[in-house]
Amino acid sequence: MSGFTAAGISPTTVTNESTAGADDAAQLAPLGFELTVPDGDKGFQTWVYVKVSSNVAEGEICMLIDEATQYEVALTPAGTMIPTQRIVGVAQHAILDNGFGFILKKGHGKIKSGASAAITKNNLVTTAGTTSAGRGLNWDTTTASADASIVGYCAVDASGINALATCFVDCG
Image (tube, rainbow, N blue to C red; front, side, top):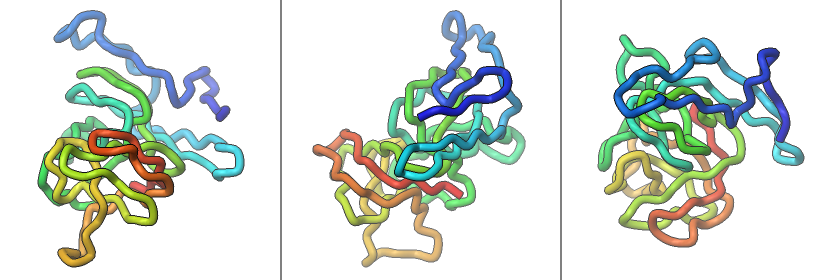
């Protein structure tokens, strides 16, 4: 994967606090800035620049906190159906509390399955019903609703619970 901004910021650029609670991480781009990069034969990836309000790890799903803090994100809560429009993306690397970095909005990436069930291929992935914050779950068509918090489609199974699945992420 290649791609970077004119300032040399790549999708993997992360700035974290010098010490926990210092709130001194450097913001290197405007919040909400989108970076599109080629991903070989998988098309393009679209990344969005955010500030995180809690530690996020690879594969965890992030949502807007509220309209007053645009592009400051937190993990999706366990067991809650979040409106798709509130989902910003999926972290593809760790970003610590009050840190800045890019999360994947669209393209091939990883989504972490919850503690209750693994994500399996050929299934839509949702935040609804998972028992772990920020995690994905196979969408259950028997309990489908108009807004199912769908964040992607699984191409390669997760190896088990709390594991990463290869997915086509689509968060808007």
